[in-house]
Amino acid sequence: MNHDSYPDSYIRGILNTAKTIAMVGISPKDNRPSYFAFKYLMERGYRMIPINPGQAGKSILGQKVYARLSDVPEPIDMVDIFRASEHVLPVVKEAVALSSRPKVIWMQLMVRNDEAAKLAEDAGLKVVMNRCPKIEYGRLSSEISWMGVNSRTLSSRRAQNLGSGVQRMRLNSEPKDDKS
Image 1: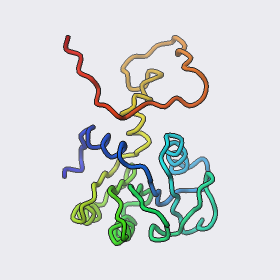
Image 2: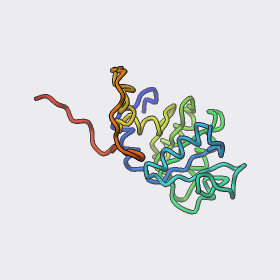
Image 3: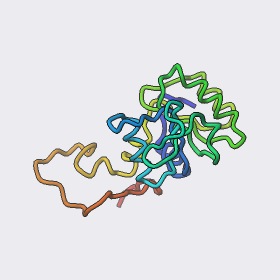
């Protein structure tokens, strides 16, 4: 697969089918991108499992932290890697060795390791590199465009009140082509 560009249908398919995501490299600090992405995905209904050897046995956002993927007592659908590119290969080797293999290896923004991607794909796993599932979810569900972001329209008018609480969009369907 060409990892320089992914069709929306490929990303949407992954985000629609993955239910349990293990995030390797999550930080317990609430100002870190990994913490924010973890929280966002958890609020969207994903079962999130934190993996961080330095925090093992503690909890992050109410979820028990594990040291390694192999310590997780349930099947994992997707491994989201928040580690530098040079640290990805051992994580992928561990994921491939699990008795119940994940279906997806996802490497965060600025993380790319072609050797690890080949290993995962040779084992039958889907791979995404240099993307953030939080950003992709928001983009594909249209959450990002609610307030004019990504809409190519700027306005000084106050945004419409969409109600209280977190609004959740869907990823289920492809955008309809209006050719009437």
